[in-house]
Image (cartoon, rainbow, N blue to C red; front, side, top):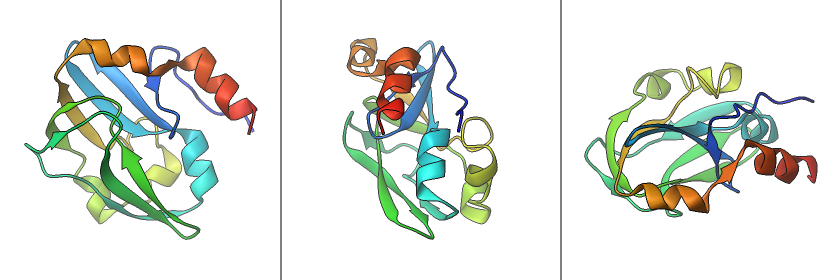
Length: 129
């Protein structure tokens, strides 16, 4: 299956994507992650204003197959949470890369972006699976 992997996003090895707009980072899960999890039925996200640290868990995603932690691609403060996912987590099944975004983070430092993968490296990671 061919997955939509935007070239201008950053990626974690745990299959989160990060779209950077100046110091605001929108975070979600990749289509590969959604496909691997199967039907997503529940999402637990942090509160707005919560501080999160790169590489640490910031929430949980639950599917009919498994429960998985969500990992922060950058450190910073959560400034917005996609509240619609609490009512309808199935959006993640249909559109994890756009409408299914999880949180927006005001990042502490751009230096952490160097720890993330770009699209070609992420494509290689999932092609090896």
